[in-house]
Length: 170
Image (cartoon, rainbow, N blue to C red; front, top):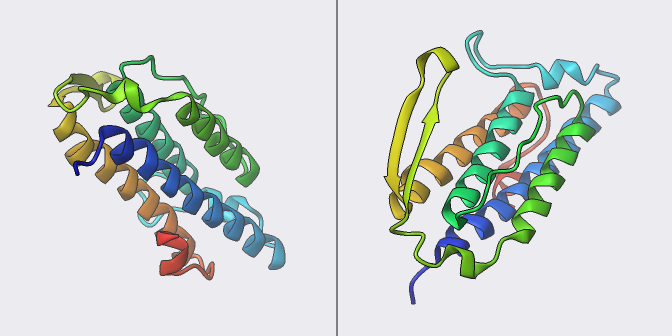
């Protein structure tokens, strides 16, 4: 039995979304219990040149929606990057979940050979990435979502939020 492109993307990203929402709830609860300004977590980073916690969530969700949209051959929904609270980030996850629910396995038929091309990087220094669908999901989409999801987890751990492997894996 082969793994469908739908299962390799939508199913995987829905699982990560569940875990991400748990982490967001735990981060907010931790800050509330300790009377810590939520921005202490939302704006945290492990290194000065690293994206903030909030931006890590935004990027993880952007890559998940972009990956699925490109593989399904549909337009990528636009999410404004205006989130400023844990509730806003959870709402962003809900928007992504709503988008993923519109996708069907039939839209992913033949996606493994679909040619995927897109630009990455800052507007003044963009690189064009090109993949076939199979390589795209395996070497770009899933690894990138997990990378940014891992940074969310690491930032919470670094800031003392009691999360562990079960929260990460679900």
